[in-house]
Amino acid sequence: MTGVPENNDAHREVTHPAGLSSSASFSASRRAWVLGACAAAAAFAFAGAGRSLSWIAPAWADAPAGAGLDAFLALSQRLTGRTGFDATLGKRVYDALAKSDNHFDQNVAALNTWLQGHGGVPSDTVTQALQADQPALAKSVGAIMRAWYLGLVGDTSHVEVVAYEKALMFEPVKDVLTIPSYCRDVPFYWTKKPVNA
Image (cartoon, rainbow, N blue to C red; front, side):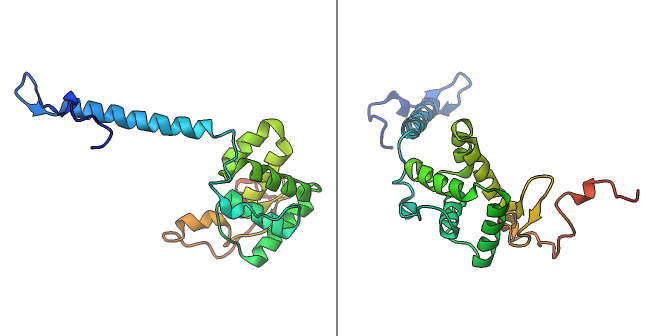
């Protein structure tokens, strides 16, 4: 085993009072080495958190600057980790998000710029990092993820369904669950009391 000195006492067997022989010291030494290696990896990860992580995601280094559909799709790829989207669905999602937020195009441009300086990271990490300093951008990240994964755009008073069977929430379970063939109403419609009741 590399990383463990050859003259380490951990290689000796220990005889317990009950007469059982084991390499308990070796296990403890190996466990300590693994924990130390994990701690070092975590320290390197956290130490680099403030620096640009662009070396992790070089494919997005040439993301379109500015706003528009192409910039939105590039941002969506970075946030979801996907390599592409259905063109018709992408346009529908973009149009609905732009209609629901007057500053959406500006936020897309700002998010693409921000991500180029901070590297490709999961959307929940991006949202958490932006929440304190730029809540409008964090809200846009949430809206984008909600649109792609749930197929919903808008707030509680006006929700638009932009995707149903192609919503990304169905992808992880597509091999075991059949997607219902239709959507009767907005999500959770069954939780509201009927008008005539």
